[in-house]
Length: 220
Image 1 (cartoon, helix red, strand yellow):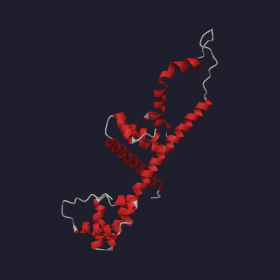
Image 2 (cartoon, helix red, strand yellow):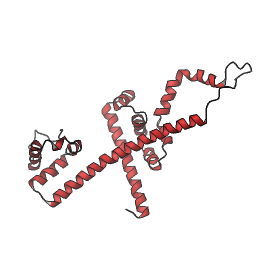
Image 3 (cartoon, rainbow, N blue to C red):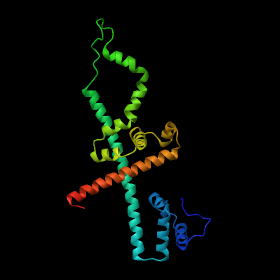
Image 4 (cartoon, rainbow, N blue to C red):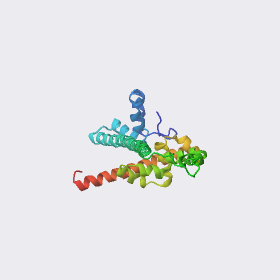
């Protein structure tokens, strides 16, 4: 497990208590959620303080910190699912539109009727077919217009253009951070940071909208 403790400096009593507890109970820290929770220094110190100076107040404070941490994990997962479902709805809408509005190839473009309008369109666009498909799946504007959930649409709209591009490529096109970084000529860490920042921004926007609805209905 990774830990933010800097071993070059002298550890506090709380940090030493935490390290001692972890060494004697390694099975507890095999849980990924618990492991990630204690990657934050303030959580380590709070748990160590509970070990050295046990009290109901410290126990409640640690419990509240874990609840907030776990809520953030679940909400981020929920937000990712919303983006994924928006992408699914977008592709369903594209398929419905293709079925309802099929191309008609039987009308000739000239008196000889050697080639119809449909065939002409295909022949002219065959060289750029790959790029056109890329636009459909990777253009943030197209993806944004496909979002039917009004709250998610508003949250996505509030992002910067760079954040919209990264979210679209990551969740609508299913492209890995490393590949996005290569295409945008930046580091993978920069793309990951942009994606996480965008998700947090959307999370805050959705949470604010939910609180506003609760306040208006008087149920909060």
